[in-house]
Length: 448
Image (tube, rainbow, N blue to C red; front, side):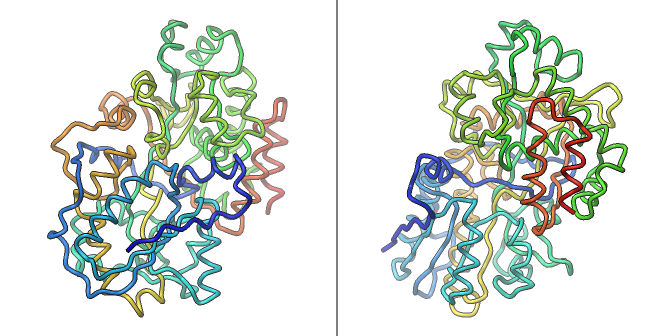
């Protein structure tokens, strides 16, 4: 019998509830231009075929996830776990859910308390980047072939730098990828008679047609706005320089970083970025966009499954526009295979490896992955049945050749855990009206 627990800290306020809605990619490290989306195809429905995985030897399995009841991933994961229980009635499964913001902290505390779950589903950022070295989790490279996962998890996902330790071992099994486009209400574009903005000229026409009032909103106070800001800089700034600056500082002295910030400021001042982004959270921004209060939003694909079908079909996807002298010639969109994956705790490996193996093999069956794709609009990091059309309109749009040919995919930065929170806080000044490029750069450098 399975039990579901929630360990979200706080008093269950409206803000807490919003935060329970989904996991996020945070500041994962990206992939090359051979984008994960090329693998996205169709789905199948129904429970995973239990006979396709090896039977466990019985016992208890504890899994910690960032997928609460309001999260699009909750329902398919429930089905996958239920199918596993049906095939393994001798296993007692316990699922603990948290918000993504608190998921890693709670796991770290459970390790210190000697009560770590067997598996944790999380993204390979911040605290998780040190868990293998600290002995909290174990590298999983040796299990790839043994458990039949090497041929199922996409090779690009296995090579994501954030998933790898310094000696090249996998920290965990990649499961969920992401793409981070800018979403536009097609009726706003049609009413204004303008295309999805790609250039400075397009931006001016777009903003003018909308009356000069804020067009594209983000969560300017959190990770959502921070990543939109970094994507904007990547019109000029290479991923190599971005990672170096993120680790060492020196933003003000880098010409490309300065150009990127100046371009961001220009977009903000002409009205491309909504002034409502200042102090906004990602869930507040999403609510504003879904409520038709803003023409666009820059938002990660984790939210694809959160959009009602009738609204999803009327959204067009693009990227953040770039100026004429940018180092890329098309709007930028960040993408990676680092939204979520499965890590094995050291205690779980030592005490429960047979049960862990049987569940992980079950989780990576193509039918299981297809459930996530179908029900949550997941950008998959592993193979599944692509013979049927994609049911999620936004995922289908993101997978279309028209979209992929119209944007430049950029990698996400690899920001040290000792820096990322303070840098996110410092960069939030960028969303404040009239904050100059110089002020933004100085605030970022002050972190170091």
